[in-house]
Amino acid sequence: GAVVSQHPSWVICKSGTSVKIECRSLDFQATTMFWYRQFPKQSLMLMATSNEGSKATYEQGVEKDKFLINHASLTLSTLTVTSAHPEDSSFYICSALRTSGGAGETQYFGPGTRLLVL
Amino acid sequence: QKEVEQNSGPLSVPEGAIASLNCTYSDRGSQSFFWYRQYSGKSPELIMFIYSNGDKEDGRFTAQLNKASQYVSLLIRDSQPSDSATYLCAVNTGGFKTIFGAGTRLFVKA
Image (tube, rainbow over all chains, first blue to last red; front, side, top):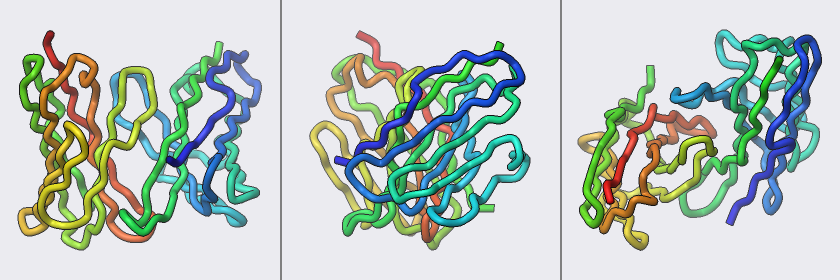
């Protein structure tokens, strides 16, 4: 199977601090990864598309200076929430895109990171 | 705008029954179709993918695709309480762009 990990699984921080979340594809290489945010009882919201070796593509309304994305290798993308505030508290989920002969491009999700900003 | 539509539910079925989840999409050029299951508080988990018209079976799950009518469905046979979750339909519209539906909440009553 395709395994994607995220670290940390949950984090509590004080308002104003920065938090870094890692997303790793463990058994395949992923040129493209995605970062989502999900509030309770709401749908997945795509924040940005992370491309290895190039700048991330952000969705409309997502502040690129607040949510810094780095995709430095084919197995690792990081999301840094800078100067976090309570309204940034959410469930952050990454996915990695795997290319296979069956379904073409398939997204596999990490287990998510729950962020609580006090 | 490319869209993927699902009934939000909740869809409630008794244990042992067949649960039928439906999804429609707007982009006729879509090539691949996916069903994910998301338990409350967890991240989505891939259940099945389908890219050819017709049915694809995997255990208790059957995905059905009708490109002419632009719909894809997921049937769950012998539904179990552990199947209670939100089911997300996802459509690959080309390249790496995948559009997710908002999901259908399924509740299987014991």
